[in-house]
Length: 270
Image (cartoon, rainbow, N blue to C red; front, side, top):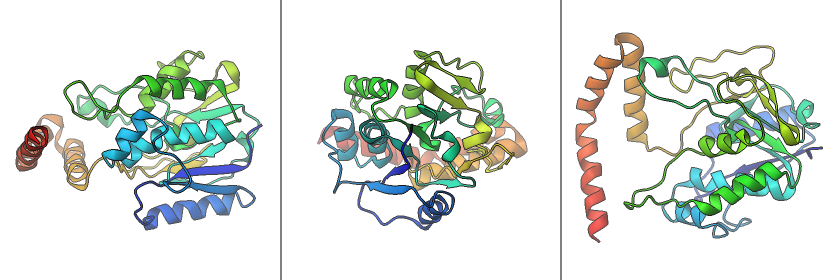
């Protein structure tokens, strides 16, 4: 059985933003008898894994959390949620699962954008497991084998749902169907409407009677400029189509891309 503990990660030492505080208040509202634990530099060893250590050095806090969240749930059991997850229902109904997680929203706009996109299970939406679940150990072992740096010295910013989904396929996950699935080792994968009813592209939220939480997609792993450019491309695509949107965004982003390239060259020469 999954214990009544909610874990979240907050690395970097910055104050919690107001949105995070509001989301945590929703956890307290719907799970009043749960213990809530914040994991940070003061109570967690960020040097215990080389991938995580490098991510911390590069100040990529979301990627530090990618490893830490798996580690703490594996060690102690409980539920993890990103700080931009808002609860709209209680979580007691999931406690009898040995492990649970959910599909990430796939917006049809991605097809208009001409982008390939994996069907992915995303633990940041909220997942839970009993202490010592073997699937979590496999994910931790995977992180022991990968580096946060690519061979050319750039950062390996592969999103964690890719790794999580690949491991779950070993337990019987069919990633061609974003449906409710009961896997080996007592793993239950829930439909996207349960934990991911909000489009990361348009912000449109479709609540059903199955919806338990809403991932607000703060996207802390990209900077403010990149997020603004991304939103421009998405909005233009919806109104005028991908071809026009992509061209306009490329033009608008040129100064930023040049600046980024120069910074990269300077950094490599040091």
